[in-house]
Image 1 (cartoon, rainbow, N blue to C red):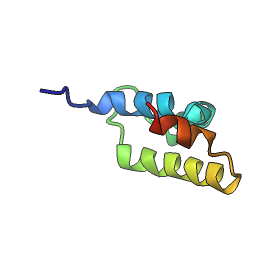
Image 2 (cartoon, rainbow, N blue to C red; image 1 turned 90 degrees about the vertical axis):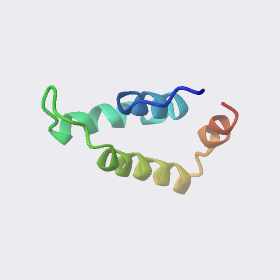
Image 3 (cartoon, one colour; image 1 turned 45 degrees about the horizontal axis):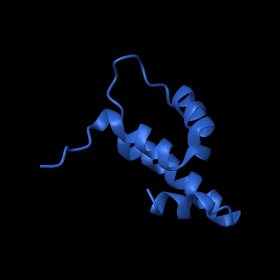
Image 4 (cartoon, rainbow, N blue to C red; image 1 turned 90 degrees about the horizontal axis):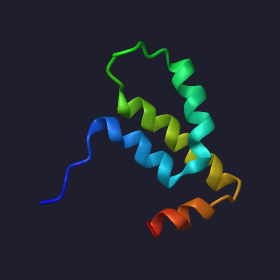
Length: 71
């Protein structure tokens, strides 16, 4: 049986697949106002990640897309 991805692992996996999001993610976490121990709302976090992907696509910077497909 395969191991299920845990909620706390999700963003690390996305950052591994899309390293260009790392600095934006750090800025986002600081601006999001999460308190220590507060539940992270992934659906809101995903919206910021999706916006990053759209910016990459608009800028024709899709090399990470191809690399991620090969992981």
